[in-house]
Image (cartoon, rainbow, N blue to C red; front, side, top):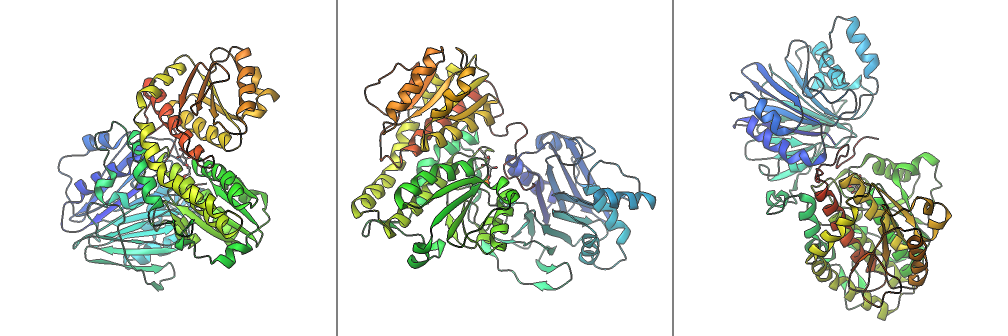
Amino acid sequence: MCGIVGYIGKRQAAPILMAGLHRLEYRGYDSAGIAVGNKGTLKVAKCKGRVRELDELKPQRFKGMMGIAHTRWATNGEPSDRNAHPHCDSAGRFAVVHNGIIENAAALKEQLTARGVTFSSDTDTEVFAHLIAMMDDGSPLENVVSAALRLVVGTYGLAVIDAARPDVLVVARNGSPIVLGIGDKEMLFGSDSAAFVRHATSMVHLDDGEIAVVRADGYETRKLDGTSTVKTPSALVWKDEAYEKGAFDHYMRKEIGDQPEAVRRTLGGRLDARFQTTHLGGIELAARDLLDVRRIKLLGCGAAYIAGATASHLIEQLARLPTQAEPASEFRYRNPVIEMDTLYIAVSQSGETFDTLAAVQEIKRRGGRIIGIVNVVGSTIARECGHGIYLHAGPEIAVVSTKTFTCSVVALALLAIHLGRLRDLSNANGARLIKGLEALPDHIAAILKREDEIAQLAECFQKAEHAFYIGRAAGYAIAMEGALKLKEVSYLHAEAYPASELKHGPLALVTSETPTVIVLPRDDLYRKNVSTIEEIKARGGPVIAITHPGEAHVAFDRSFEVPMLEPELDPLLLNIPLQLLAYHVALQRGCDIDQPRNLAKSVTVE
Ligand code: F6R
């Protein structure tokens, strides 16, 4: 979603800010803008559209050694030039960029209008710019911003500059991330560290309710009431090169290709061949605590929820613990029962998804035990959970998640083995699964080498406007993920169904132009799936099977075989062709693969 970047130092701010905006493009946005301060004046440029259009629009001479910039994802007010951030007060002295939603904006706007303020946008953010201007009594900028923030109800990650105070920037956080980047006699900040990774050597995450005063030579943090807070900078985890697309046309394709290495990193140092178990120091739960666990609940949104759904089968099989996945976005609205012997697990790539964070906070508030499965180190969900398993998958830039889906399931497989080995999972089975996990990266790499075959499967979707994705048990979870990928990047309507449910309704929609993709492992349910395929074929529906080698007991229209690994880990391999399938369908349909319409990478609003 919206992105923020800021700079103050001895260099020209605009090129650094524009590069930062390019880095944040992956989050999804509809307009962009920049403001720099120079010799008591502010220069502002903003427009609807892409960052490259802002680059063209922005005057050549756009000098100033401090500034802020923004990519906006419309929430209040349509995407337009006038609604793009930064927003300024009437005198053009203060500029504000803001992520989040000011809930009492309408009331504040009314009060400001009554005092003669004219608004030039439909946004909630502009209210804040006028509020600061009105409250400015000449005291330090952080005091003025704090006073204004005390009147605001809502969520924000925001940054303010004042033309008359060119040596300071103020940022604040409440529900929307802000990270400070510490450079060499210069300071930066962003809504995520991607914005400044090239220039900073360490970073500091603000907490909710904190405000930071940022100068070229350092920063101070405090609460809104003025009490100082102490922060310890941490090293930047991902270097600049990790954000590069390399020789690939799209980040999605690059990240699908990253998977063998990403999985190796998720596994790194965590397999214990000696005791046929896994090491998970980050969960900080002793064997005794884990033995007290009677139930597992996995929470996440979108692909993170589906990763939980996929792994729930694995955990139940290996640890024999009742395990259930639920969309985090639904969880807190149904007054859930929080059980003390349940282990709650939040799954999130970004670690910033608002709905998942809210579920974590609700569980904590009610005394539940929670760990996080998170990719971004130091992110809000990771910090809120306190304990968990980092994926170490590297940055995921494409809006759709691919490698972090796989790595989340792998991390949960590690947990499943760990829990299983504390209970009834035998040495032999522990050893078998560990060997399976070790072999996983090479198997993924082998599937990726057969991309041409999958590109040919994509041709089946040329005339389609609808598709079914079906499977049973963990295969159904993989079907859900396959359908989500196809929807997101190709805009085809894809519906995932448990194969067993097809005959209870959706079969009515099967036609010769509605392909069905079936996730078809050679497991105990193979024969049942074959019956479902026969039902589809009897209605003239084309069937594409993602399956294992062996004699086919039914004629598919197309199929792709993945190697058999271990039954519990097979879903991970069956998913890889579905990622490539979605990619190639989108490619053939000419879609904007890395930034699909209406989607954002890190959904930090409700
Ligand atoms: C799907 C996708 C989204 C995210 C969801 C959760 O491809 O990318 O559905 O999975 O928004 O995001 P995180 O994992 O960052 O919490």
